[in-house]
Image (tube, rainbow, N blue to C red):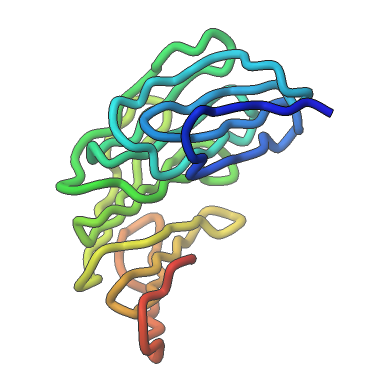
Length: 178
């Protein structure tokens, strides 16, 4: 049994799909560990980290943070590969599509965004919520996304057009997880 120490409260943790790695986020740093508890790398996001996610192949770690960015890090050498900029407030969630070709981000700026993983280009902006987003998720095939918000709504979106497909609004309070 390996016991790992982060030094600060851990806000997020993620296991890679193949089970080789665990990423833990505490403060403004994400640490990459082997599944047996040996630290491999530290990713200094530069602001409080709000989420951490692995690419489907486990070769990239995606972090989101209070600095309004999402960042991609290589598990092989720990290098920062790309910074996704454009949100107007903290990015609270970030995730890969199942094929790994796109990234979705959710922000306190009331928007979701879809990015091209390869070049970091913004593909779509998802607008319609009236308050901060709390989470975002792709459907299994990647054709749709769902967002949750402090406005009490869950919205389904076309990942191709960025248009709202459905609004689920009978919630009486914040929806915290999509």
